Length: 557
Picture 1 (cartoon, rainbow, N blue to C red):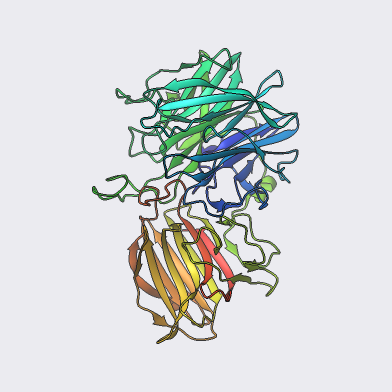
Picture 2: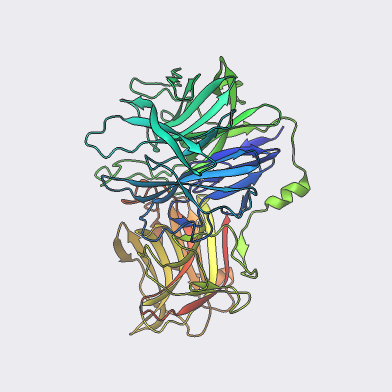
């Protein structure tokens, strides 16, 4: 038997939702302010996963202009019923305020690869909506409820409302099905098994105390009873989580929770959940937010666990210990009686280097808030190159020329080769290592009125700008090769304007930098995404000066 190695989706893949259609598994994950919306992965065996088309890939479906860091698409839920795929999700348009704006929508398709429908508006009681298709054909949406009152009436509140599939609208009144005065619940999903309705809810936030609770009822409207077996190292005041890493700071899969469940063709059960891998860096004790907390650069990822049933309650199962557990596992046994062959595995090849020789961008790229249409990029103006036109600055929430890929490991390397001839200091192009619009490291080419064409390294930490290198003069009309190496939390940048960009000709620019500020806990605004590695161009003159990128490579070491 093969083992599944966690996490199964590495780097910034939070809030997973999973379904099985025949022998095919699909997982949807949150994308927040990154466009297109909602990542979908496909697998035949729960081990090998392939990124497939984004469902929200038209501006008529998704326009994120103006949303802040870590807002946008939250917690999609993917379901399937009688030939139709359903995807519900939240667009958060304001969050760091007293009254949240949480718009919930539904899109559908009869083909997982799309196209998906235009969005249907649902109720907006809170975020993390989830659909449930009952045996009698009725459909329901469950979500958590936000509360702007001070103080809030409940710590956690879950609401249910029926959905009218014929008229494509909500039906009847939304009703509370569970309220809690002492535990925060979110990320609800409803399942049905052996006559029981199970209400899965993430508990205790999404940080290191995160966990997964489960409740059940014989009636979908409740009342629901909570499973109250104590997890390992339970302490008074803890949630009764069926899975949590809150008291095990040394295990790999921290922040574990926000689960969704699936069965296999042979009747086994698994659940996917978010998790995160910690660095060895901490916030200062007097930090503005999360003082003393560990930093997580990669963000929240997706892992999978084996589930067994006992007395009609679900439990995590440890194959290594051969017993029930509440601790998330690094290794999980694959499903029985099903293996994919080598030919099928070849379809899941990892994307590493892009020579820009295709007509469209690889699916792995995402941009900020809007699509990269012909106003921003071209793959045809100069075949074999990505031409990127400079638009707004890196703080913009509206019109950035930028594409990026996920940080997936604490040992990585990224490189690119770019031709760019700026005429003023307001024109820049280069290689960026970023968390959001307020936190990044940017190795870029520009033009200084005293030096001419030059290169510099900019650090931007919670809106505080600092050049960590001098402006270094480089050759005119010559391509420049840029490189980033990530070793743990240390980022080191290199460049060369030698046409033969062999390894020994790269020169380091700036010092080794502690890049752990590009993390969930260190960023003042956003903390739900993860570090990204990208290429970008800005032209603050409005002229749209372009840069031509020969290739872009991002790989684990």
